[in-house]
Image (cartoon, rainbow, N blue to C red):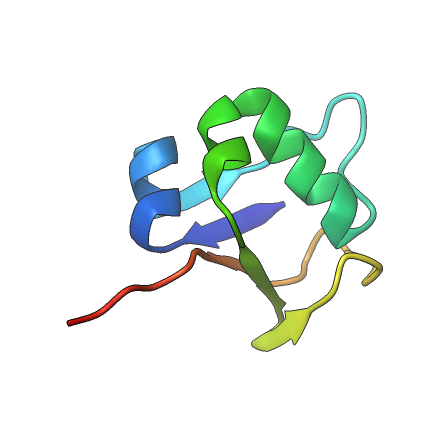
Length: 80
C-alpha cells in the first residue's frame, strides 16, 4: 500500500512516498493506517490534525482502504 506524503509528514518519514508494510496485514481503514503510522513513526502523534485523502477525496477514519487505493497524507498547513 503506497502512501504519498506532503509537508511535515514527508519530513517525518524522510521520503515523499512510503510503502506501508503488509505484515501482519495492510490497514483496512483510515484509522488503522493512522495507528500504524504512529507506531512506526511516533512523531506523527505530535501532529494536531492530519488529513488523509483516498483516491483524491478527503476521507474520515471509517473509510475502508484497498491495497490499490491512492492515499495521500496532508498535514496541517500554515502560511504567511
